[in-house]
Amino acid sequence: MWAPYNGVMSNPHPLNADLHCHSTVSDGTLAPAKLAERAHAHGVDLWALTDHDATSGLAEAQQAADALGLRFVAGVEISVSFAAQTVHIVALGVQPQNAALLQGLQQIRAGRDQRAKDMAQDLERHLGLPNVYAGALRYASNPALLSRTHFARFLVEQGVCRQTHEVFSRFLTPGKPGYVDHAWARLEDALSWVTAANGIAVIAHPGRYRFSATEEWALLEQFKALGGQAIEVVTGSHTASQYRKYAQLALEFGFYASRGSDFHSPGESICDLGRLPPLPADLAPVWDLLH
Image 1 (cartoon, rainbow, N blue to C red):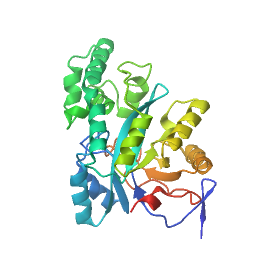
Image 2: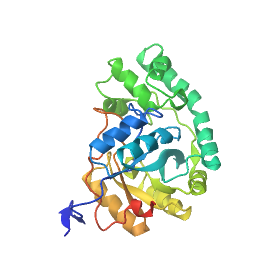
Image 3: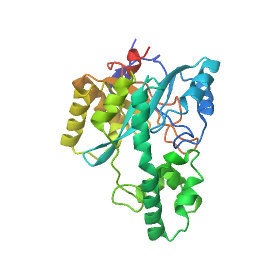
Image 4: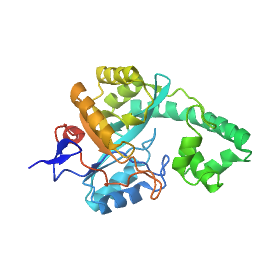
């Protein structure tokens, strides 16, 4: 029996999969084991940890998930540059110790520190705040992965904005103070690392990118040509209309569909772990590819 969901038929008893979230290893505020506990408490059946450009939290996450009887997927979110924008590729089911993957992620992390210092200097210049770099660093459990989110939390602490969502509407995005462009991995390199690690490549939250229709189509075509297999359809930053849009694109391109909250922190994230609506039932779920 299928029930209507946003104009698309959906399964009334779907798998509660949450295949995109972040821990203190990157820009989340909960340790991997705490995330596993939260996912389990929220009824998640299949859970992936996908920290930015790092796999160092996966062993802790796996151990905690095993203790809870929670099915776990080893993942990572890879930063890619495409058409002068940053695109995120979620890799699912990877072998965490694969040499090609680890080397590629290390290359990405190597450029983050200077970028963070440049971001801090720009924010200091525009806001008159001292010690912005040191302030953001206090929010980063892993100094090698200092990110925009850590700066956003510092600006909230300083009273510049009331919440991190407001920060990203005023700062740290293209054309706004604190944004520093950076060349991440090439799409073809990221896909080669995922393939080497026996993972499944997923375009994360496609509705967040500011591509023209032509640029977005080019991304999807090139991603598929390079071996990409899936796209996030239901995710924390998508609207109901974007669920429908990317469901249709998944069908047109023959992509598997993924579902993930992109959870970072209680009280800060748009969507909590395990709280997303289900995937439209006419899509092939990406977990069909996971073993």
